[in-house]
Amino acid sequence: MGRIVASVKIENPLSRESHIRCDALVDTGASHLVLPAAWRDRLGDLEEVRQAQFETATQEVAEGAVCGPVRIQIEGFSPIFSEVVFLEMQPDDGEYEPLIGYIPLEQCQAAVDMLGHRLIHVKRMDLK
Image 1: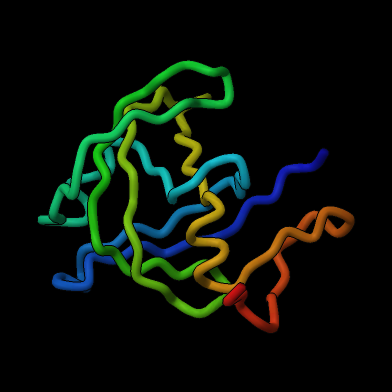
Image 2: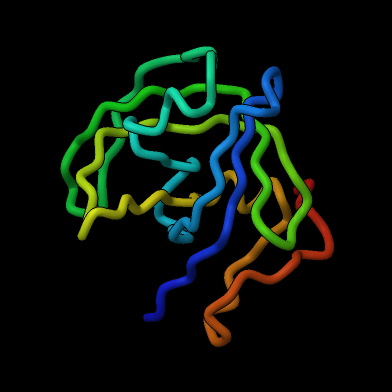
């Protein structure tokens, strides 16, 4: 299966000059937008909603800080307001790999095109 990477901008809505722009791996097995804990200060003073445990793809348990709200805009899609998870990450070849999970994907009406290895716009949201 191919990798889908999307450009995303994350902003502190109370401090619009505090933002992060990065490429993030689309991971439908992840729930939230996940960023490295090392980037947390770049978004200014965000409220920490809670500490939570997360299970990684390798079935390890990691604890992270759930913070928000933040303004998230995946390139080509409408902006949303949601939470972000900050986890301790190890950079791979000097680069972190942020993740875009299914919650922000659904909120901004993005779906994964498995054949085209890209994100596509969903016309309607579910209410059922």
